[in-house]
Length: 144
Image 1: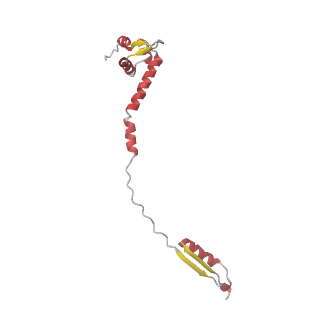
Image 2 (image 1 turned 120 degrees about the vertical axis):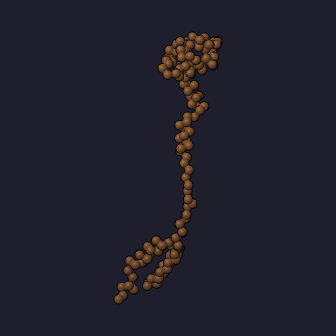
């Protein structure tokens, strides 16, 4: 196409027939040329529609549909780059399980004859038991 766009020639080729209800039937190639002409910088869609005998709203709809189809057909490079940047290889070391805390069997015989048996307790539980027993008052510890 030349710099001076020939709207008369395009207008002649655009409408190829009419439907029974009066609506126009458009040539696909001429329609595509008209849409591409609308996408040029500084072009008035309304002025171009008027020059070609097409409703400006109809031409705007064609341009939007063309842009949507174009966007669906070829995903933008930015999106592809972002998607590839979103996945970064990560090296993970195997999880080392901490050694299990040893279980203790604690048995305490109190002076009053009571036997406390705490089997299978961990170190923290055994410490709490010994601390509690140390705070208890018993008759044997008070004899002097």
